[in-house]
Length: 429
Image (cartoon, rainbow, N blue to C red; front, side):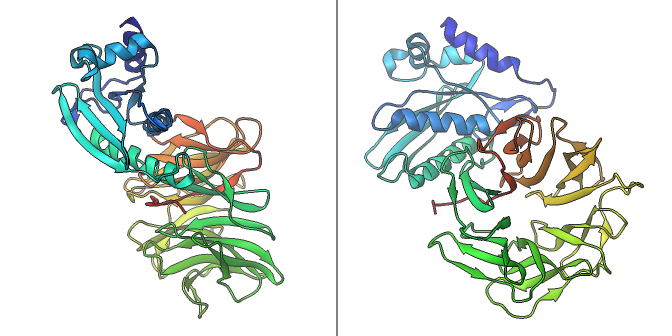
């Protein structure tokens, strides 16, 4: 019991203090800024240890709950109680536990029970089917979906574990699961840059070097095929899909600056110019969630700043507060899934840092200060941002909790950059 008390005491010390309370899915109340303590019990059976391990890690990476996993025999016996028939609700309530997650392997997958400690009952239960090959890519992605649903039961908000990150390393596009597993290459040959996900995660658009400059290509993740979108030569970079998947906006230029253009994603017909840069560079578009507006980088003020405009090019306005001087440099916007914030990179004291700006009051929040940090991209639930950072000595991908500032390393091989976080993926590809 002392081991259990120590684990819960450690979890509770990490919480902040607030006087406002709110309810969550299973009827719990907790203080915003704190994390409810969730116990994940060991799971027996084929691949049970892996199921419990991945589930625990996904819940921890959500940054919405504090996960406790009883590993010692004493802690496990105390957690189970009642001769192993049910969690020891009294113990966990005394120690501050909010929920207990219990799993059992079945012929079809795994049965998950989430116990409400305060009410001393099973609050949610479901059998989740899993592919027949444990630890395969499909199996892991299905398990991430299970984790996201369990988090929804507990916190009221679905997680983003069932997603992937595309990025550039060794001049090729890679994709990796949200927990850093299953890294693989999806392009071959010429230098590839700036991956962007289709809203259903079936395709990735990217820029690559061709015979007449750079070109926008689209990779089909279901069969590995690729096709070229752009016909014009010159510079074609930083593609971005519209939320409905019908359009791709990218930067096109020759010798006199670059402008954003819009093209149909399913054809190679005429493109429509939507900025008038007049010799300046306009790049890195990011759609608002409703598809009505675009954030983008423009040098029209004399140095790069973040602008927003309607998708037809009308009503362009400066988003970031203008600063005089050549040192001011803001670029690479990423619009949050809830539509309230835009993340971008800003040069501060000679190094790039990640900053968010609130669309309502234009208030800004600096999220990083260690090393140089670039290329922000939001997670599907809007809680996290993936970035490229050299804080470990080489440029790697890191995931930031946009609320607490907690950072975890996603990639381990050097040279990772230009990350793009996918939408939720319902099945592995």
